[in-house]
Length: 255
Length: 241
Image (cartoon, rainbow over all chains, first blue to last red; front, side, top):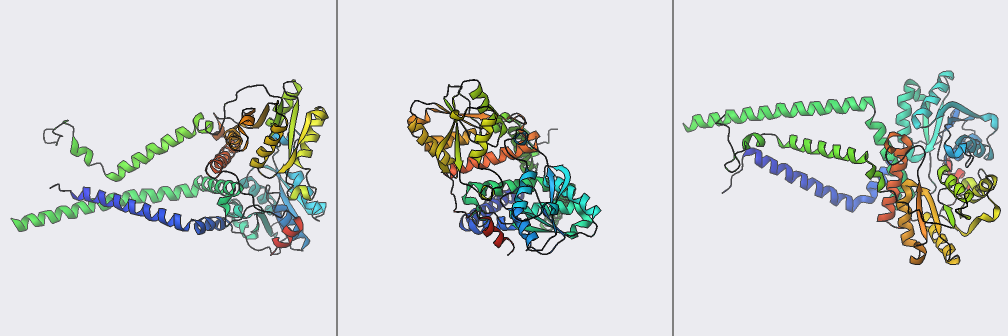
């Protein structure tokens, strides 16, 4: 008969546990993938209902949704002006193929009833959410009492909020996020359309990248990892010591 | 040294190897996997799964998939100017909110105006009959055009990382005789290519978007298009609730 040592049995037990966990996960995912995926979409949305603020800032991008929400807020008297971040042009803009993001945004806002003097472009040649936040931080230093509603696509609010909190620090309490609902993608069935799948998977990839490259997160994860390694070594040594003393006691008794 | 237990067959030090904890072996395996993944990601093969090899066959007409992409437009204009191509095809898209309110012109109008400004003769610009909402519908409209022009060879210009996806769509939507008359050509973005896409934020963004879109096309097939009301008034009326 083949006998197994304590280490071998433990290894078999770990493998069995891993296999069972994986099987349970697969069953849960296959049975409840709809609520899980819908939850993933709703988790990204941390926007609140529009409420009064001094300014409403439209983050560049999402031109089919974001500026319309900002224009509606201004028309409803919830904000006195619109802020946008100046964006970097790309070769298609330089070629004259498509108008620049800034031009399109300004045009939409004016077509939807926002006066030109109510629109303020924050300088900075923004190219990411991070640089949008930097542009706003400068404005907030110059306007220390101003409150700002930031309008962005619903799936983008969690990452934006995370970035703005890191950039604005103490001033972050003066901003809040308003979600612009997507017209062509339903968060409850985003995985069924190509646009939805690309939008949400890209957003999760970006969120992962932003979080993974954050210094605080790196230090925290590194610290937890080190603590786990040290803890497991300590636990293993202790287990070996107690096993040794049990064997000695058993040998003494037998002898 | 003689008290170290060895394998009776090979004479190797067996117990020493067994003493390496399983968790360490798992960590090492994961590390090796990660290194392989990073090396693969940074190799040109990771991007080549999205690309098609150009056949450089002759064509009579050119269709620009993404008109907003500068490099595809420039390649189309250069082909017409050099006399290699005599027709540029444009396809109308279902107008979304920005076009409906007049913030931007429709893509076919924008393209037509730009081509005329760049000195392309009006009779070289042809608008395909019909309106498309997805690339699959565009491919079907191209199929109709190919049926109407049985002697013409068509070149479809798209960005280099969309080549495989467009090839897949054409394989599934075009009639077989028509498919052999269509060449997909991926035009490389001047800012990044398959050897350095991970070095630029835009390259990473385009790579992953293209990967997700190809995956959707291959596993799901034709895109599902929901009925969307693009009215600006209706959108704004619900935006504040």
